[in-house]
Length: 399
Image (cartoon, rainbow, N blue to C red; front, side, top):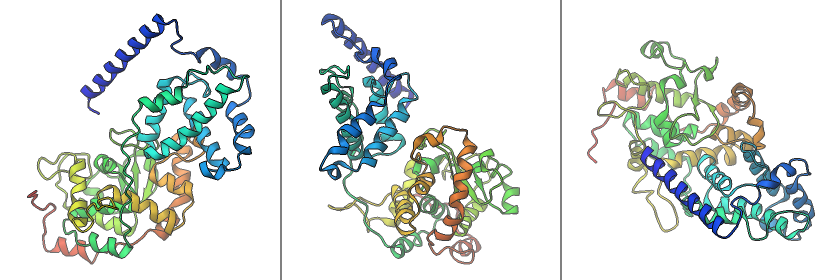
């Protein structure tokens, strides 16, 4: 969101809030009817647990809406988020609930359908409190229902990606002759990076154990989060456009090592911090340019159809996640860590960065290197042949 859009959105919210105050004053209504109960709830048993044990555990068709564990996870996620506010989770404001929707949508990349399921569970608990006489929740005010009406859940793309075999992915990948494009597609497939994370990747974020490369780029691999690890990428959550709320370290296997090495050896030697640069002006490579090698390699063969999505740069993250979760059978929390998702339970991330960044990396590093898929890249194949024949770092862009 640009500053002007952000300012416009803020002005709009303030205008609506002023109107709410006028309506409330005119009809003698409370703007925030749950505020007075928040402090009291802090002294009482967990109302979500009460609802779970009193209602959900006794349902005959619990599998229709998920398991008890699914409900518990939903409530735990919301409670963890509300700890960052000044309110008890049973007494949220509409704006806090809307912010939570945005957090699930933008930070955790939850699809609208997933958000609706989670909020159905939250709204169900609130509606029970409204009916049960021992709770103070007014029957004519439900912040979850209001937030779901007012908030944007994002775009739902119900179509799945086409199901490609590894051989099919290899075939399309190895049709890419441009050195920079091969590195872009390779890093998204092998590390699950979003387009924004590739765009924001800086030389300091990558360690490659190669003395000649280190002499070319003194800043290479100098980020403190890398510690003493070799051949690894650090993905920071603190850059505009990076959707992950937590940092992560992802190993660089031998294939990606050669892809990045060749790219960096041929990259223009300019004083720019980014790993991937534009052809003209050598600026930061943007989203459109990152998506271009995907569309050139995979389309029109894998363009959008009536039943499947077109393959774009987001396919790399999808393929990465599917491989490690389904093919390599990595534990769920290990895949979450490598994707930059918050690991459940979310309060595991309450400590300092080193308390989870490095221990989690050590859990996945060896398994990753053993189980990562191979694209058919080697130092004696495509990359070295291109370098020997003097092929350009960037092809002319005639599009």
